Length: 442
Image 1 (cartoon, one colour):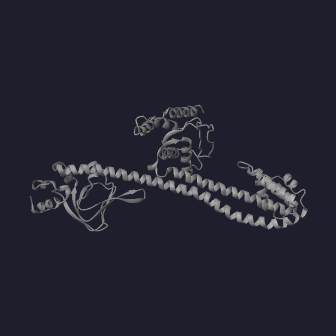
Image 2 (cartoon, one colour):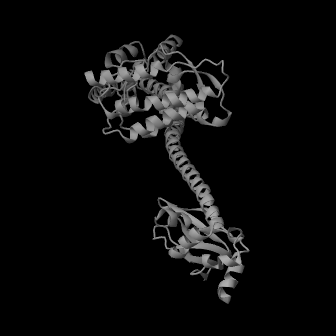
């Protein structure tokens, strides 16, 4: 054994990996060399062929991995640490990038020397193999954590979009409400001077009882109604008829009804009557819009709350339909332009389950179905309503997953008391089978 080899072996035996080596094990480290790296210098690059195994003698080395366009530090190696064994053992490229955090000194084993070390030094081989299992588990956990964070980030972005839309609508409605109230106050004073109490009562009653048409109005019919109303208003001397007509038309008013309204009103008050009615209807519409926006925000918040803190969830009787609806709410930002069919059995009983965990299952199933959706157009159907299912791979996929769902479901109850009653999953099999049959028949 040369003086250099003896000095190297003595230096390495101070590290845990080589602590059990003896003077007779000098052959284990022959062929290696000590290298120095400056701060920030790359020692091994992700994706490059793995040609060396490294042991940190001095300094600090970071191990990072690329996830998409972002590089994340997985771990750091201090004196006594080592890296590069996994790609050497698996004969794969480096899956991490090793970079010196400060001026560092490392001992480098070429591939041939590494395999000699593994075959001739059992104590070193044992520690390396043991570290491989631990590091693979760490890497898997880190990747899963990153995936969860990425999924959470996408969901948060979608929720921000879902909350922004109703919030913007509520803000817009509030701003327009100020204008409508001001307009109402402007025309109310002159009307008080020329209308009797009976006429006021009739006017306010008609405004309060105006029924806005349900559903989306046909654009052509709406335009025609606006033109007819504008023509009537202009004949009554209203110069800004084009501003008043759209609101009256949207509220379902027709020229004959407007004629009847002002039949017993003073002729000079007709213009202000129409303006007052338009302002009042605008206020009602804006209040409804604000209420809808707030209801939508409340719906999203409730759905988010059902996903929060799953570790505190408890076993309780839940409505599967409600959980699926919450999952749809959470993913509504991805449902734009997607045809969504709901076919819920109203006879389905409540079942004992962990609501927050089951909601996440629905979310993943729906999210995966959306990723595989070949076509996107419209959105329809309602809860409990029969819907036609289009034949697709989703039926086969659902049937394939049934055994796994059953195993996972039963394993959850196996951790409960032995006397606990395990709910039957036959309804799920029947639901998938009937859906598949319906799809084929159509």
